[in-house]
Length: 357
DNA sequence: AACTCGGGGAT
DNA sequence: ATCCCAGAGTT
Image (cartoon, rainbow, N blue to C red):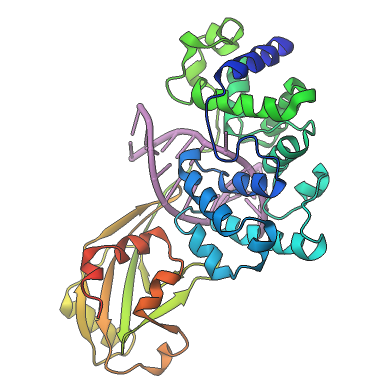
């Protein structure tokens, strides 16, 4: 059953490897690494442009290593999971410094890199060096769970072990790179999460889930996530052509990105000019201010939380001392700084653009 | 083992 | 609205 799986999959790939991507067939470990980090929990279509932008700007790992943080984060802006970008830079600089810019070529050394886990290490090892390591990503979990009829949850520790062992067992070890491409392409185009193409699937005659009518029940996940609701009210304090900007550095979302002065609440606040002025005076001690604009409610859906909020532009005739610890950026510099999508969406609106002073 | 980290597209 | 995507790091 295992050999049949591998043989049919490889045969399918020879006839259907038409899923073109800019990094396919690439042998430069730097480019493979970059593409795999970009694609972590990210659709190919979404990561595509980011990859080409990065390669154009940083053709080698040394170019990336020498780039300033802010510039790289700006290039990553909008892609999400910003810790990937932080680790990408850390690893580029480490390889530049400690290995003379040469990417490691042993699985254990690749896996030891920051931001490189079991999936990415197997991908680099197999694609760049043809080492016999099977990738285990969302596609692999799904294809294996269905073909072998496995109900073990894929998000449990024992489940991950089980699937990793099975993936390694069915790996075509003398053509690991091709095989890894094959199973991921197959999962993405045939054995899809919703509405899989079972009627035209070459594995269908041997597929346990198909035989038992369980295709839509597999794979199994045991954890369900709860979505938090948060209200973010951003005050754009403006003084002499500059805006107060805050760098996010805590444990929360959007680390290493910038924002404005934030008031977070659990419940919605109904703002108008009078309530803004009252809040400024009573809560943060600003007596003299003009309320220049209150945006409509904006919304940002994240995987694990929903952000709603508004942007409130406040003109200050003078800067109170407790706001002097922040950065004050000229308005025209804002486009150089990385912001979360929730904020860039507002910065791109005509309501903001037209009122630049 | 459980939590946390984005954003977007398909359904 | 819900699911899931070429997952990884921290607690």
